[in-house]
Length: 393
Image 1 (cartoon, rainbow, N blue to C red):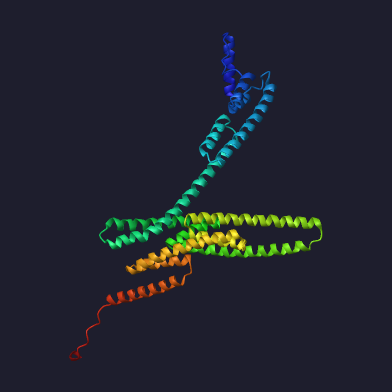
Image 2 (cartoon, rainbow, N blue to C red; image 1 turned 180 degrees about the vertical axis):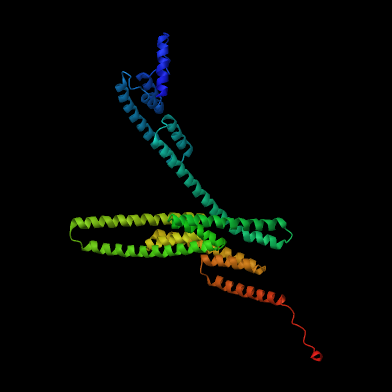
């Protein structure tokens, strides 16, 4: 109200003085509004139209024009959002976000544009977090393979101080990674994403079975049992439904039921394909335990699938090679007197394959460690007291 009054006073003064009314004091013309729309400056155009005073002689024409400009502005917002999402789908995040920023500058009052930009930035953050989590998993795998070798360097050369520092640094980093993986796994469990949670917790357990890791593994195990039971029940119901279809006499019911069963089988096949693709990715990253879990789930859903058998064969070949590597590392450590490290390697091997040779090695190293502990306890035992002097009695 004050701005309008001030503008009115300045217009009156200009008229009394015989001057031309400045453009910023007079209402815009329709041509000026059209020029703003042509430049797609919808925010400025709408602001100008909404500031038209009620006493303006062409107020109704401007109101009709305002409705048209509003429709054009909303259409512009939807078009820019659709284009930015298409560019995002192609992987060009910079251009996609820049397009929404430009749209917001042209139409700053659009709630649709603000919401689209917020959603896009959330998707960007989720993608970056996912990449960061995958990097942590790869880092943990590499450190687990590197640690025994660094320990061997420190053992062979006791004066290699840099080697000892590297061992300590790796152990400290692994401890830190366990906490990060535990947190990520717990968050995934809260979101109901048990597959992602298991990927974190399996690696964390290989590093250290902390109470948090044990609790998460128990929860994941219970969820596996529940899902396996649900899958078996679904398979049973599906088989019963197929049998029932054969006995249905009415054509309409038979077609509907057959379509439902076909759709269900296609859905299950998509889930099997997803598990197999994830298993192949896990194999590429040498995450053998995760790959085995995914193949097991695919096998429950499709017991006779050739694709499942093929991935299972690739997995078994990788496990055989990794078991051989771990057996060799454990034997070297055992031969050189590093019994605790050898035991750790063989326990990791046993997680990959229930192997009689590995169990035999573990029993042997447990006996050696028990003997060493017994010998150590004897060394630190205090000497017996001297015999009593009979004369003193």
